[in-house]
Amino acid sequence: MKYDLTQCPVSDDDQPLKDETGKVANYRTLLMRVCAADVDGDMQPVKGTDKMLRYDVYIQLKRANGSIELDPESVAMLTKGALAFPTIVAGQVRDYLSNPGG
Image 1 (cartoon, one colour):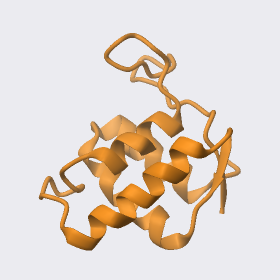
Image 2: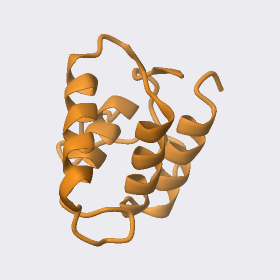
Image 3: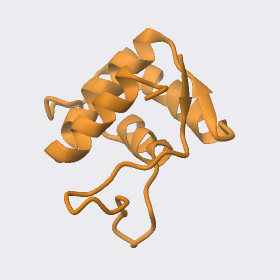
Image 4: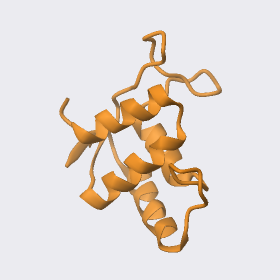
């Protein structure tokens, strides 16, 4: 499926989500952080071959120009990895990945 990486999630006050530097964080930024994390959505260390999938998706996201095509395996990995985010962000990432046009 094709995803628009320029869309932005919102914080709990319905304002665009910002990172720790105050810069607006879009889904590209969030998904890259999922890929770069050392833990999965269960807060367990990322294991062997999962690291390679995460790296491959990270490179695709880094090179993407506004949108990206993701296969079901990558979507599943990103959805699970997003569970490491706070609840409001994790839920929005889940919704975004389950409904790319939405």
